[in-house]
Length: 512
Image (cartoon, rainbow, N blue to C red):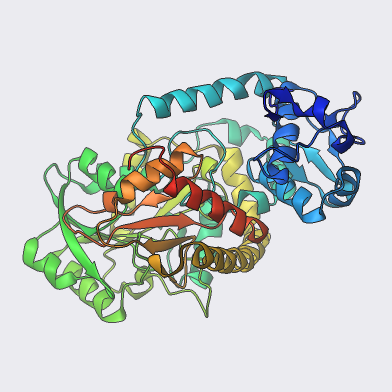
């Protein structure tokens, strides 16, 4: 195996044979797990490391079945919860997956090619950290690696219905008709646009025609389409301060002149935007769940913003990135649902509700702009995979999407509560945890004078993914804070991962 836990330089499997066992039904060649009771590493981490090493080395091939929690706990003489913690960690990183009655198996993504590439990916990532490679402000880089605990904007990948999804993909791949092999509709697959139109009318209060819906490559693809169609170099654009860094950078790259507009407990302060740039071309807002502070835009501010847009003939880009995930009562309606003047370009994405790698989002454009966006899409913005679009359309139309959202709300509420409790136990009153009623992350306000960016570097050095609040600001100087994702941390792991975070933040490694 590639990973070995040892004590005083002597391999644990030779020193503590009495604590080792042969794991049943793992592979044709038996593999032994040896536990070192004198190792500083917790037992669950030793189990995790042994199984992970066997998967990466090929001793456990793709599809190999692992023993149940009970069976392995009995063989090793440890508690079931200890084994479950190791399995949860492996599943969260994508090494294994639970298949119900069929047991737990090594993920099919770990074939020979993956085993060869995995160590190189780890070395490259470690090297990048040592060289001080820039990290994405919202915690996305490095690309192509499993999600890290506390990573922001990452849905619960362990709870995604993969079997159902692969069946839908296979169905539409097998049904490849000649029409699907020709040039696609530049606005996106009509079936998906129809399904989105029906869903938004019920779930977000947005009424539109199919011709107003455009499929894009996620949120940034939507910004690309909108700015290519409507933005003139140097046009002023109101932007929430603090606000989403990647959206801010995309608009600047497209040629916008950003006007930072402060926010308060009611969201964007519209009067400050009017005072700074009354003739702005755009206002970009996260009305249902402010990014990153979490409050919704109040009704009075919504009406004031819509009034400004109608009067000045400006456009509002509504980023409804967390609209579905409300923990109490019904989700806050979209700003677009109040748009009688047809000035709002509503942007949604499947990255947060399904998976980021899908790279599918959409724009609901005002009717007067539909022809212009269609022309730009046909010339400059390539269409997404038609098979994936058809699979998402079926996911929506057949009711799977609504069931998935309901299930995710329950899971997220449970994981959020467990993480809040764990953070309180670990950090006490030193951290002030903001309990927004929606979203997929918590905001932990730190004591004044804290260096949140340096703390994030310490956490990143230990493979953890919280995000500093300070890089989200342009002019605003909010209290230092950490954005802490909870979606990918099962409730059973909350205390353990929080202890890891506390140890990383208190360590001497990384910037102080």
